[in-house]
Length: 300
Image 1 (tube, one colour):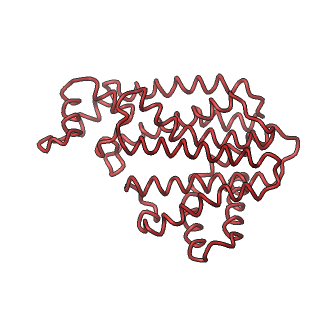
Image 2: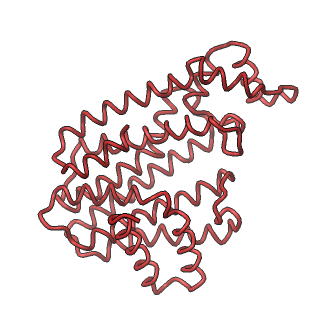
């Protein structure tokens, strides 16, 4: 585990171990869930750290607690999302009732942990956390309703669901350092979430497993494009989405249409639009080279 991830992980353990109001059973589950996510890394917490570190002369140790608090919120959302979608192999999906309690505990712990730091602007940080969390929940509701069936509504939905959370990580770090936030950080913070979601959508169509959006009759940019083509493949997919019980999907034909019919290229093109927007805003922010390199990797 690399240095920054290690600091955030240690702070997570500290927050869990020192929460006097949680039972031993809840703490044990919370820690086990956290351990399952370590391999993915703490990208949201790192967004917070880099945007704090960029605007201060000396890094206060409490920033690792704030980064850990953000990761608690993100993990709680991941758990709730998986319980709603019922498509996860993580251990929390096997004990949904108990896992929901853990997720609720983490939601409370996130703002509580920030409140207990010594930062001058911690109340502003908590406000940002609450506002962006609510925006993400609204986006998740739209996603579950599965009504975003054109490019504009779909982009608006993932901007709320995913973009709100990545922007939150960036802005909390900035406001703790400066007492204010900038439009540029807000913009590229949102775009990072949009980019990552589109990349996930593309990747999710490459295998025909339980998480495949098309098999689950979900909408994403490649599927929206595919359904707009009005050819034999798109008609069969449309019938499948409309619960035509005699429809048999030809996986090979669908894969070929997604890859060679323009659907994947279309999604990549939209992703690149947001990549260039994000990079343009990033160039206006005086963040150090290590932080900038990390952000550029997420943007690409």
